[in-house]
Image (tube, rainbow, N blue to C red; front, side, top):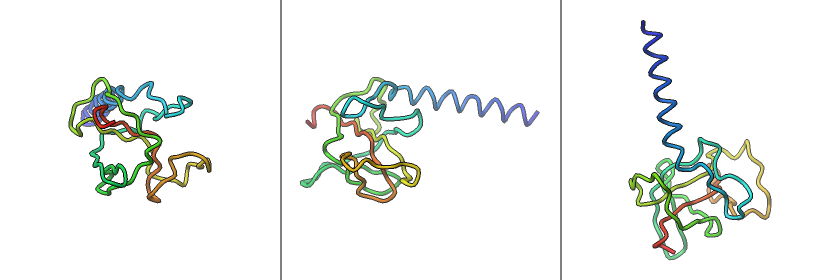
Length: 123
């Protein structure tokens, strides 16, 4: 019985996570060439705008994001918990090779940013 309950809970969690990630489907990078996410690496993120740029709060660390990859738009399904801020990227650089001309050169060795979504009124 415990195994069945565990399996049902995992199925519900998987469906919930997938549905929650649907707001990012079809989101393309600033070149319009590749997807910002692979169904798991986009998330709402708090942001702050400073005199030197935009920082996003990722895993309790403020990380500078490159201005060139910021998209000013609203995402359908945004819950508003971060006032329209969303971050797409990975937290481990070991499995990704960076193209030297790509503007998403990380400011932190833990984060590689593909896309940043901010509300259009900040533009």
